[in-house]
Image (cartoon, rainbow over all chains, first blue to last red; front, side, top):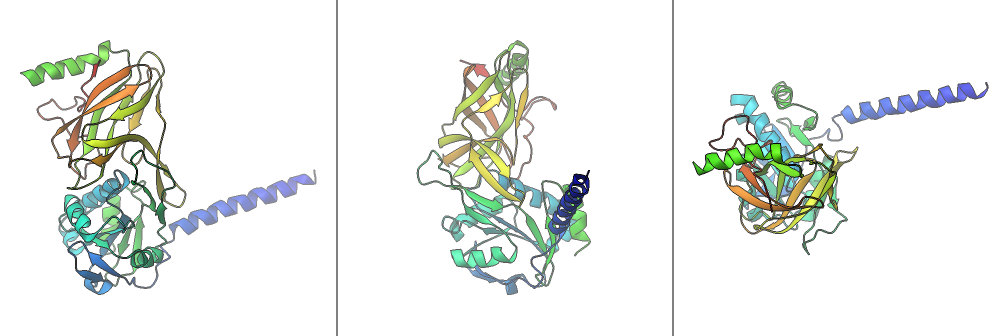
Length: 192
Length: 161
């Protein structure tokens, strides 16, 4: 009988933990301050936050060797922009590579137009890319598995799309796995 | 006319088939110089339990069977799998963000509208020829087959050797 209260306490604590975890995941942090970065655009020219200032940005971290998740996410972004209608023109879609070793500006230049005519591809040194990814809590690393083709590798990476407001601050995290295109468009519209 | 006959053959095939097949195979267009692509569709089981053990495609150096593991942290981890189980009479959906057939080392870009032949090897059904329809780069589902009535299965025309 004396055990019962302990079990109840454990259950209550566990429930509280789950709730906390859920709340924590809904939080739009970690970026509270405007983002800052120095990268290179797919056109080969330097790009910093100043070049995007005044425009809301839809930001995705991916890589061109990615055969599935990145085209899926970029297709989602393209559909969200279409659903935004004329207001989409205000929004700058951006893909930052988390595989700068392979994704040169030239490689990105071949890649980005296929997904959206205004998609901006960004690359840089590993340090420059990490500096931006860290501001969003985006994780990535070379996958610890061999593919059948020597020299080829996969990347594990956070597959979330971020909306930045006109001041370059994180306004919304979008999980394409759970949020329908129309809902995402409405959420973005309310923040333009 | 040829297309009509082929289509008719395709559509009637599942009725007679008792072997595992990949139906409605499709892929996305890729960028010039892209090194990877993915093929999706529905694996449909035959009379007995089967496994997809190998895939090959002339435009890719290597073809692997992959799945995606989605971490609690939102991190996507793509991993090769030895085989894909195809239960008797069951279906396994190969779709974006999940199981797929990965083309590695593309010798050329995949263009929207093209038909891409693949050779699949099942443990039980043996080698099966499949044609994947290539859709737009941003496609989230199989493209409608050109000239086919709506509702018909896309691609995946099937012939056991």
